[in-house]
Length: 88
Ligand SMILES: [Zn+2]
Image: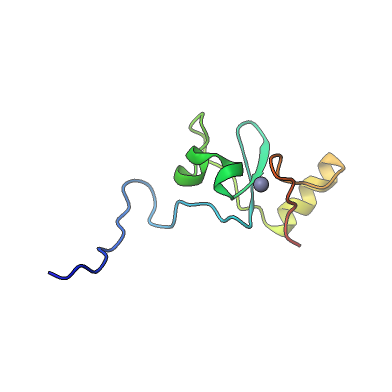
């Protein structure tokens, strides 16, 4: 036995990473917009990909999604916590 890391196994859900992308923008918590940083997303969303109500967090939003939503709401879409905008 060596002490190399054991492969990360998924405890639940799909095999892809469950952590959010800090550079992305996400929607959850009844339409709250937040970026993928742990501080902004909140630990539950950040680690599980689901918000506190158990709903799946939407995102990361694509530039097209962001442009569409900005048109709909009439102002730039930004993280409600740190104010970071979407990538474009
Ligand atoms: Zn943020």
